[in-house]
Length: 181
Image: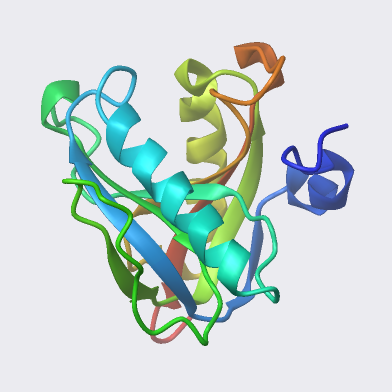
């Protein structure tokens, strides 16, 4: 298996929804508006180019999975979706090198704290059932979501030999405990 494709077995604990604590992470970030099946290829390409440029200069950086936060409501028309695409970087990165691109890329820190997560296996078109399972777990555990829908793409488009039936995506929400529960 390619070192660019993570071993999904280490994420099997997420076959059932989990609530845990996650540390904040420094990220490189690009924003893309539009249908994610057609928009963002250039921006995501620049994000990867920046990541590998930084990785070449920071030997402590490890290969990571692409992530995206989707802050608009699910009923938003796809051509108006906002994807905030990111990759974790080393804490010691303080500025970005010039990679000659017109894509706006920045450093940001994604806040986490308590999160609810689940592993979705299969195409994105079938995520609704997995998301519903996670939301039900959040509610039944006495929590509410407190941040946008986030996805971490362990296996997905652009990876060699990966078909939609083999996609592996961590679905994540920041959560907070409901007072009195």
